[in-house]
Image (cartoon, rainbow, N blue to C red; front, side, top):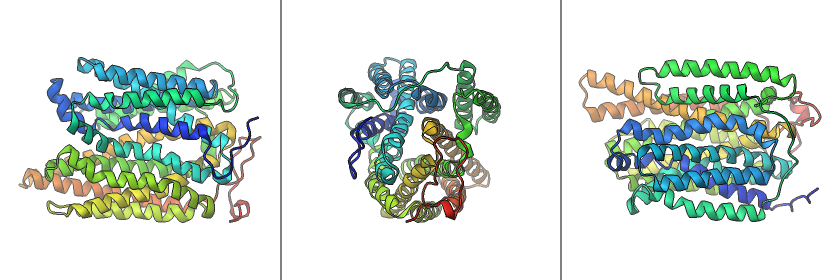
Amino acid sequence: MKPAPEAGRTPPVIRLLVIATFVVILNETIMINAIPRLMTDLHITEQAAQWLSTAFMLTMAAVIPVTGWFLQRVTTRRAYALAMGVFLGGTALATVAPVFEVLLLARIVQATGTAVMMPLLMTTLMTVVPPQERGRVMGNVTLAMSVAPAMGPAVSGVLLQLGSWRLLFAAVLPIAGVVTWRGLARLENVGEPGSGTIDWFSVVAAAAGFGSLVYGLSRFGESGGPAIVLAGLVLIAVFVLRQLRLQRRDAPLLDLRVLRHPTYTLGLLLMSLGFMTMLGAMILLPLYLQNLRGLSPLETGLLVMPGGLAMGLLGPVVGRLFDRFGGRVLIVPGSAGIVLALAGFTQVSMTMPYWQLLGLHALLMIALAATFTPVFTLGLGALPASLYSHGSSMLGTLQQVAAAFGTALVVTVMATRAETRIAEGATEALAQLDGMRLAFVVSAALAVATVVLAFLLPKHPPAVDEASDEPEKTGPALEPAC
């Protein structure tokens, strides 16, 4: 048995995994500002260039469902070495990619390593950190899980101003190398790996189902997109039925018994809605700032950077407040702040002051920070230890699906409204602006559901019977005292 971590200190294994996870997740959105440069340098269309982000997201959605099984059967060091080694290989290949096809392959390899890191971090945290300190430590994890994708466009804007698109990978490579080296030198194994065979039918069904769903959502407004979504949903249904059968033998690839815990399920829903709104805003704001206001990628990145930094800096503060006061006092105002920020964005115009845009974006990021940290902590804290890895995997999978759905929703609403306004005689700029406003209205309406869910979540994680997979019993009598 390893000694318990000193109270008030983040275990070294968590610090190492947070840094590594931040580095790898940053790459999920780092290509957003590079599309024009890639179109010119690689002589590709905009649709082809978009695949560099879509393929990354598809791979994440396909691989993450397998990580729950994987993390229970390998040591912490082996999982870390494999994930970071694969990520480093993909990054190196992307740096020297001579043609688009090689670059696309490199992004898929990168995403495969990234898909393991987030569940590894969450599972390890829930295993080594005592319940009374999980909020504080989870606040640090918010930096990797939420701020990294939010900072991707800003970082890429700065790097593209300094050099070619290859710099996006060349700058990450030595940082990831040092992180990998330091991690392997200091990382210790947590828990004992189990044994068991893998159900390859489940692997194929999960990859095809979640991959098809995310891909279909990414091109929902195009021909064939809805059909691909439907096919993905059918395959996911097959995957679910297979897991229910495997659970009778206690050998599922992704243990769906996590959904029998109401607090975890509510947290999963709230997190999904939060990621939908965050990714929707991340897509709409650069389009508005660059296409309608004429800002450069660097200027766009600098304008949204304060919000991302505020989100990261507030994460640990929010975590400490959670440990002291519980989750509801943070999640309710946080979810209300999301609605208010998105409502403010519904008033965007060709002359809205930049300070107002910066303020609304900062409010959105701060509200998301106040929401995500306690939701993650409450949700995973409601599970028995045997389900931590599966709960983390489902959390990561739903993040990818929510991101794809949020992106597809705002783009489809914006494009449909713009086409209608152009048919009515509006100029292209005004039609696009009107489409963006309506997309923000839809996002704000969805965010209202987060406020409702916030009131349903308990103040503290309910008591869990570690020897049973029965769902937790909720109610005031079981809620820990303040």
